Structures are given as structure tokens and as C-alpha cells.
Image 1: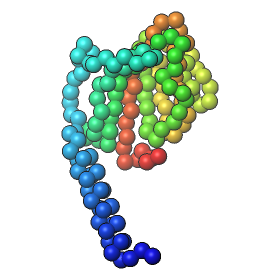
Image 2: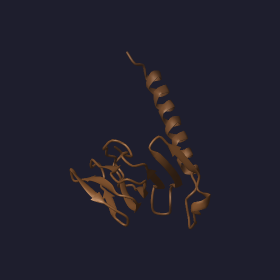
Image 3: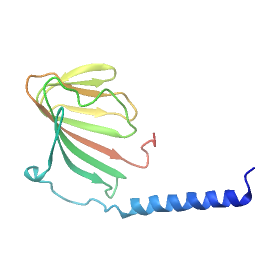
Image 4: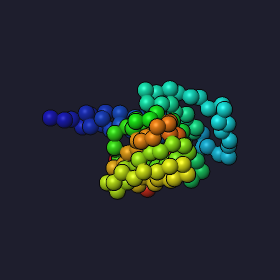
Length: 147
């Protein structure tokens, strides 16, 4: 049997946890007007190519804005097809890729743009003979599903 004291302790612990999470989120600085020099971005080598993180955090109108650039070696996929609650924009810079869009693989080249919708299965793979590079922009708002 759960006592009133057990319920009170549980509620207090839950309130403290939620307060700590809110304090951490509130501490994230809002990203304002800024520039990111390509030559100063840190290159992280991966088994399938490399990635450069550009930014991640809240802005004046978004709960979170995340941007990165991926270079994908020929014959590799960024990861298996997947879905996530946030929307995502992918801009192909170099190379030839196939993108899973509406259940079909579509071949795309430089300058092409992909919009991955919320909670829709998508994927990307390099089908060319040279590395492909693409820019990814993710965002979350109060309308983004929690999962």
C-alpha cells in the first residue's frame, strides 16, 4: 500500500527533477545573428566520411535549430532509413545521392533540396563515385511532436 508520505515524496522528487531540467534548458543561450567560417569548423572523421557541426540551440523563434555538414564516402549511407519528430532540410552540395522520399529512392545531384517531414521514413545514400557533401538544417518548435 502506498502511503500519503510516499506520494508526497514522489511528487517532490518529480518537481525537483522537472525544475532541474527547466533550469538547464533555460541556461542555453539564444542563438542570434552570427557567422560560421567554413575553415574554422571542426572536422570529425567517421567510418563513412566526415561531419562538421555548425550550431545547435534555441533561437528567438525556434526551440532548437541544428545545422551540420556531412561528407559521405561513395557507396555509403548516412544511416539506415529512419524517422524523427522534427522536420529537416537537406541541401546537396556535391556528388550524387539517392534519397528515400515517399517510399521511393530518388537520384539527386548538386543544388538539389530534400525536405524530410515530421515522422516520415527517410534516408540518404551516396550512389556516385566521389564523396558527396550535403548541408542539414533541423528545427524544433512548440508544434514539433514530442515523439
